[in-house]
Figure 1 (cartoon, each protein chain N blue to C red):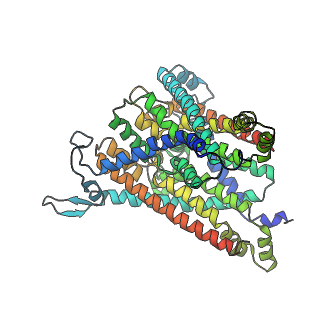
Figure 2: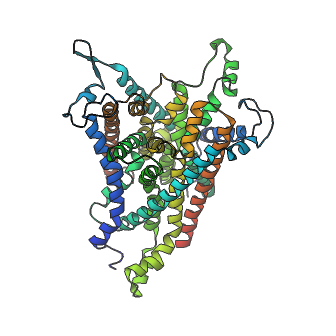
Length: 305
Length: 264
């Protein structure tokens, strides 16, 4: 039995050693270095002044700028990119839910063989190159492409609609990138749904819409919330989609971070932007954890049983 | 038994077909244009392999492809070995197991752009020269969870009685692992390794930051080519990468299925 139950502490530590070492070296220490840099003043030649005292400048800079007299005034440049990212991520989450939920519902009505095929079909695009998938949308949406011509043929009075390099193109790309993350968690909770409850609702005279709203949706909420988290978090930090499909005016936080370490050469600001992004994601994760705990408790009280 | 018609809700089928079309339209458009003879990729003229010939004979693409394969192969072997050890440890209950598992999956959750920048800062502050070595090291980090998840799932489903039986027959823990656990686990290990390989092969953001000059991989090459303008060569090389990923993922899925049926 000893081989099955627990295992000696030494052996466990040896088995976990390599992964611990990798996480430490490739996640924790790099993040700590970035945190340290975000509190240093920038060096004129790019990089930072390692000898300087700690300061909050790069965090103040996120929302304020100094005028000529040294007074702080609100600076909207970074806040705008942040708000745009939040709006894009929120919109992407809603759109993924609107399209993903019906797909997950339909999948549960299929035979087991077809369900597995659908899971594979929905997973495959996720495993293909993100860059290439966004590039494909660049081809479809571009000016004088067949889609742009068709749209402008339908609405000639609009005077030349452009589909690319705007918020619309970024939405299309983000939904495309993360839709599977919404469908699969919803599908896996729907698969375990006790359909007798839905049958009971019908027996009690509920219409399909009412049964969907009052029975199916509440019972699938854990999957929906998990899916929302899995779509929202990566959308917020997206880099490739806004870089390829968005124009110069549709910057998101990810692009702003890249700029600070590239052409803008402002590492401390890049660091503080990164930590702002991580902070928002952490908040989303904490809310999710609180929700899951509450959901688990209400399950115990017998709501879902 | 619940009647299947209960599960049928209006418009779900139509939405699903629409979503499938949306998921596959870009992939097919890209593949289609890569066989288009016309230089301006918007106008279809005739079927041609011309762009594929061009990319095969392009020396920068050859170098980038070789770099991609070398990085992905080494990162796969390293990350799968690390993931296998971690999965063996976390398949047994112990205090703090959930936290350990959460940490292993951390790279999946953190925004890649932040990790990429932080990794770049690590290499720079250590004074390590950027190149294929830094790219490979960075890839190992985010490949681990992809290799870990299938192995961990397989260990979870494994019939524990087989291991007990081996123990009863006086096999020592090493023999149990070598003769029972590993053979049953092997398809899942391969499945995880294939996923790690695909993820490494396809990575752009991390590579973009930690690759120095001269260590361009295919996705980085494609990105800079797109920046310079859309060309049919990009369509052709992208199609090759898409097909490779899809074939490998289907292979991984098949390996996973085979492992499940064999062990039960």
